[in-house]
Length: 87
Image 1 (cartoon, rainbow, N blue to C red):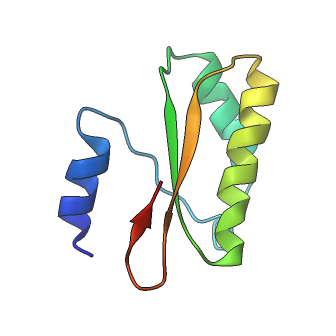
Image 2 (cartoon, helix red, strand yellow):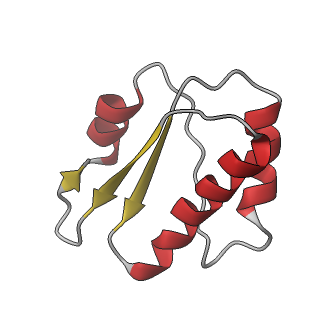
Image 3 (tube, helix red, strand yellow):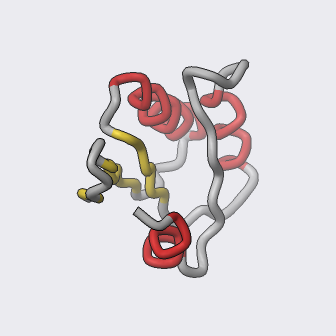
């Protein structure tokens, strides 16, 4: 999959945050909670790979939404190991 085409298709006029819950230190939920609380986020798209460790990003977003007290619409898109995108 070409990352440029992927980002253009999914993120046109969007702000993109990138992270790895397995390799990065710290808790994403707290950082995301602050971002959600202090900004007018209209929607969230979590793009993750289908490998199990990427589920941590989804859990962090769920936690952040609950902690922020905002019910921002969100969805999850999964990239398969063969590069296919499913929403």
